Image 1: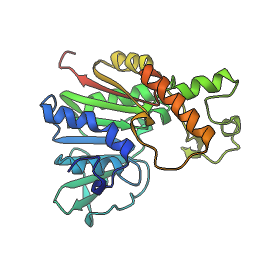
Image 2 (image 1 turned 90 degrees about the vertical axis):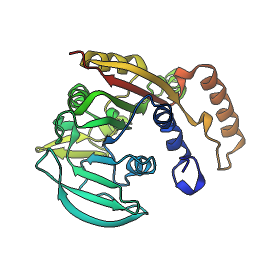
Image 3 (image 1 turned 180 degrees about the vertical axis):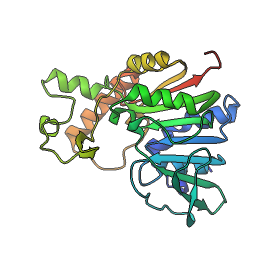
Length: 270
């Protein structure tokens, strides 16, 4: 099944994000038999996509207690993780592909999985929420097999909308009230209150610097935005004009697009 097919039920933008993974698998550049998704969320959206791709072992980690079950789920059982003495949920799908869910806080940066366990580790819309990004990326390297890939998808701090906000004197961050403790997007860890929104967004050069510092080799960099996804809803004239102008800028300068996608490879060179 094509990821962008209507019957797949996958949002068009997600299908676009994962298209280069499909291309790498089809071309033989990478073979993914096991995938770890950090910050998979309650809806298991990314794990569902990996399921559709036919990857035998899909494991998601998130701090939430239980995921929301998605269509195609046949049963839910308790089991234990290979290489880790922690409980997790096994979602057995109709096509007998197991999707594993581990409850853990990845911002504690010790992933509850064994060394050299996965062909691909994904950090999708998650690294911008982390307080210790370097330690988490180091853990990704530890659990990846030699020549395994790390995929990071994250908002681009240099996107055109952020540049325009700064140009007119507006902040690109969450409202100051959130940082002052007045907002609702907070959580508690070890008795301390933490902000649960975007702690920090990155430019592509900053992500490349982080990955090389940990010892990864940059293999592929792409930029995505709503440019490639047709809009379904009706917009006011002003919004339509604004959308067209932003699309023209994003097409002319890809580094101003909304999302960054980086694939980095773990080399066997220490």
